[in-house]
Length: 159
View 1 (tube, rainbow, N blue to C red):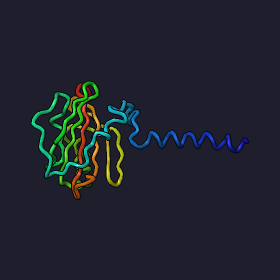
View 2: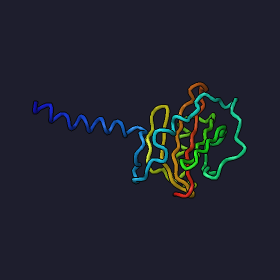
View 3: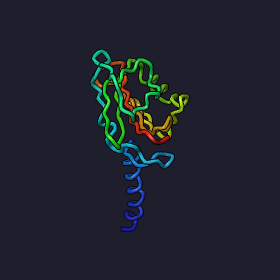
View 4: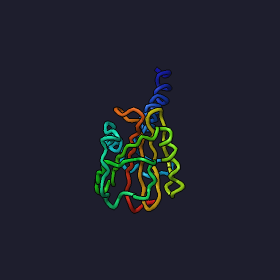
């Protein structure tokens, strides 16, 4: 019985780390609360192709218009979630790796990444800047070869 007891604690710790390590919400490296735990990535439309995307004509106040999205990105959906912020979804023909570089380079425009993770087909990061706080996510399009879906969650009054 004792050997099992000694294995239980590390096993439980490993399970807890796995559930918080991949976009599970919680706090980022700065201790800031994740702005949209568990609901952000589920809003992504990965099926709209660049040829079918129609750019939105206006955005709510909680959208950081100065956030430098990758060149050629068409923002085709904006969802105002009130106190939770705004989620904007766009698509670009820019390759995934170049989009990742562009999103990380947003710090040149005053938007600093506070935490993030990158995998083969997607990446996400929390950020602050320009009077906003938020999270961005990018993903290779599910149906449009060579295209990348870009999402930006933002709330004003922070950063």
